[in-house]
Length: 186
Image (cartoon, rainbow, N blue to C red; front, side, top):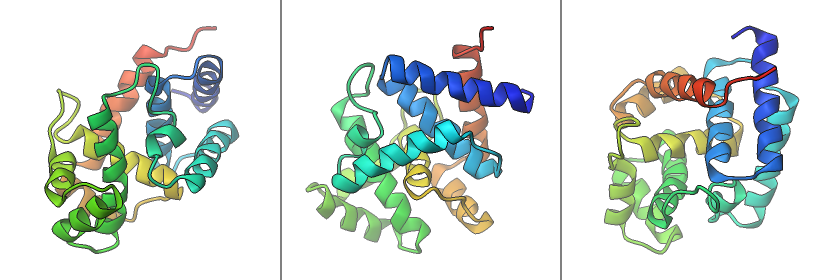
């Protein structure tokens, strides 16, 4: 997709979200942002502004990632998946900061008032055919958006190991899916 088309695509996604906020579009926007950060590519000012609005909402309620990023409500995932995704974003923060997975599960389970086993199951769970660990991957995308962070090569290796697939594999699948689903119409 040429650069101008990419920008138009992102701006159209934001406009669609503003007109009809729903969890499916919110997830798409988070994944688009994350892909830019992973690829070190330009992000439109509109998408950057949307992510920063999400972060402002998150700063008021650190646990409610789904509400802050628009992942609940219309066309949203189940409450169980939402909780897993939210925990996973914080588990990624711990793991990429050097914590062992079991220590991360324990710490984050206390934050979410659950068990370390529940945190582990949510992080390692397979879900549908959208990747080996789709909920964990979406948690990584949200972690990237929450921190406006570009992962280092070492962090990408760590993430790929835990996801059991190269970080870029699912990202490319997601981006292709978004392009097909939300085609640009002129």
